[in-house]
Length: 210
Image 1: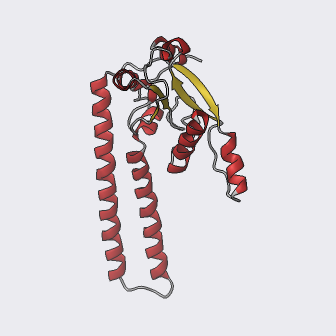
Image 2 (image 1 turned 45 degrees about the vertical axis):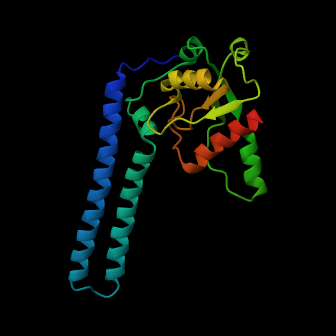
């Protein structure tokens, strides 16, 4: 279904991403400093039998959780901006208007590989969104045997890089494809992006291309 397009300008989007990255970095430094001070104070106090290790473990676990949360925000800025309504949205109509065909690639082979390796499959979207040119436009590329799979940065979505894709196509004269990461699409932000999830996106797209 169509979703309303955000009205943030490119400059305000860049500023918001920069501010969020700076805030995440500052939060990590602050959490580490607070954790270090708390541990130092706890160690200076007279420990009672059995509670010293508990206090240390408590602070370590709490600090680790906070740092991991802030690192996730710094690594996957676009996902958190999408959830917060700060990322420009796009629809299938927007992509088609820019002469890109959105297609959905199934992830079924990933679950098969996980079972073969006795691994516990992680919750992932059922498919991967991939962009390619319509058939009539693909015929204009001079290097027909050249195919490039493009991966965008962590603070944007695929709808924000259409001009870059067109520039790569024009200069390289290759077939250009791009994927959207799980957790970055406006209809799957309930999935949390991770190294495993994005690797799965890349493998699904590469398998489809091959």
